[in-house]
Image: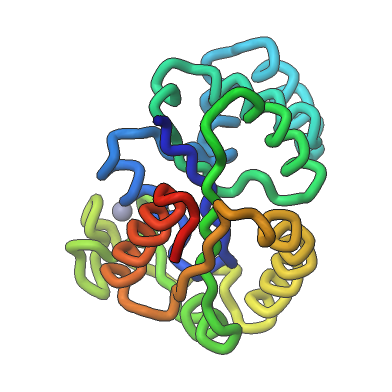
Length: 217
Ligand SMILES: [Zn+2]
């Protein structure tokens, strides 16, 4: 059975890191829209060329193109035994489109990583990123140096407290209907993201196992 996972969570909840870690542990692809958009543009698929034309005009890629790109990605062989979706869907319209794409596949497991607002603000406002590679994971690095490339860690320009609060407001406005869309399903779980990354990872695995047990626990 394929392990089809969607990870939800606000900026600062550690969603991307957890999604990547889980995907690696299961040998399935982590699919984020930013990555696949870049890839579709690079490989020059038809939909990738459409996306590039839109972005070259300085416009945002709309739902229809985004959905097409996600479908193209999920149809690839390496997603046959499962995938971890990160950052898509963002809206109920996209969730409904994903539902159509998922028809005939194993069920979508949805795990929502929640973190109290004041903790998110604290985390985001103090987040550092690497000046060279943009990585925000200090994994293996020190406070001053990037764990991936050794570059200098600097404060993110857009992470002042006002900007953080605005980003969170936008997130909640978009995600509340999305969570409401998924919450009543037996394959939905919410986990506590206000723990160490290791504990969150363990809870993620446990939530998925519980869903696999037919939704008990
Ligand atoms: Zn770096």
